[in-house]
Image: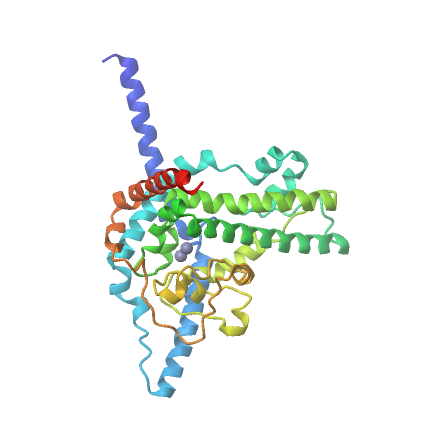
Length: 355
Ligand SMILES: [Zn+2]
Ligand SMILES: [Zn+2]
């Protein structure tokens, strides 16, 4: 073997090890990564909300002389369940796979705007993007009331567009059989912990990224045309203000702590309990609550199921007994492609008959 080949192999080995160590380090230090749902302020706020809800529920149960079963959220049976262990493995595996798969396939919102023929929207779109830089835009005079009003409107509009894009992508994952093949992995969870949020196939994550990217790009284009110049969103913790605020409670979406906003507010806002019901395999809950923050989209689409203040009892998972198979990494990554392919083959074969 020539020296050049040995040098090349050594270089590849070095880059491979560096890649693995770097991305695993980022994943394992999520508590200090601003871009992660596990960034420490979001974890701390979720813990405080969970503690407050459990304390309140315990007092109510004591008054009624009932058992509130409050040990469950901290139990080993939950955190070391085979399903939860699969979530941890998928979290680490995705940390290595996603940079290779998603980065080349995910343009920035500015690139999408430019491709749509409006490069002038770049600065506003980029700064108002999902992972906002935190810099305050120089293009808006902060003492100008009209500019501040415009900035408030833009912050709201961008968030509504983002929420709609996420809902739309989630609906595609549920209603298109070839895409449901990939989303099944997320719904195969038999217990919910905050890490279950990362139990997702790379193809699902790609679709869940494209949806809001497209919706926010369109809204950015229209808004910038109407306002005449790019406007910055308000930010908090280095993120779009409203996204950061929802992140303060969103870790409870995948948890065993029932946090419901009640029937009235639940008509407008998606609570963690809404999403826990989304993971139910009971017939009355199937396909419900696909939204992320606003309940409006589910109401319009007919998929809203409003949780009450009192916890409901229901089974989690797919409901067909196939969940244990999905806890294996090879099955989790490969089975969706097989199912997607058989869906497409059935569709192609079925088309002439339907025509
Ligand atoms: Zn979920
Ligand atoms: Zn779903």
